[in-house]
Length: 333
Image (cartoon, rainbow, N blue to C red; front, side, top):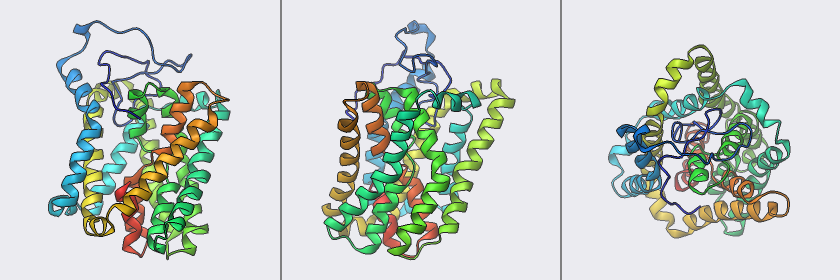
């Protein structure tokens, strides 16, 4: 999506929008699932909230800068240990969990059709598209496995911010990311075993255990914390955008830095294939749904389908795939 200035005073009701990056910036309406039209007065925003809005709006810029830093000056970011990398991912999942309640999952049932479409796009279309592109461009088995792994992981948390900026349905975006994130507990290890195991050696059991550790447990812990200590959660929320953006940038920079040599060696070809995966995935989703859903829904599903949690894919590749090159497509994505 095109990145445009984020409206600083736009507020959505609380039930679903607060993931790691955009928590207090936007709040969703549980009835309309659309962006609320009313804006609070200027004094309602504190100086920190204004800074948080600006900092989050510039998220694509920070990501680009840290990626360039990781490629050309990799020493510092590449030194980040795996335990820290895992912890940062866990923090992002925890920040998702503290904003979720059981009522949020009931709202998923209000739009079952689009949820199923998003799930199928995430775990069937994208892996198949990744495999087709990798073979069409003659990538090695390890890079092909890395491409399919990117296609097989859940939607990225940054998709909620991009949906917000692109004027999509933010609440729907949050629910779709939640569904695909929880689906990763089963689908990513399954695809790793059935498809990736035929390309390169893979520890599918390890993939499953890491997914539970990094995804499921932090989300459950966050939901329990939200249920037991809602006042504390409200106090934490104003800090979550900055923490989310910083965490994501560190994850991106570290992944790129650790793969800087093969990224440079691959040149523009690998970057083109990875970009094409996301572009085609989003385009197919968008135009394929135009006749059946409103514009905001099509835009949202396209973003949710095309954007992936590449940092999670990188971690899985690093921990459970013997071939080093498997992690490179995740770093590029």
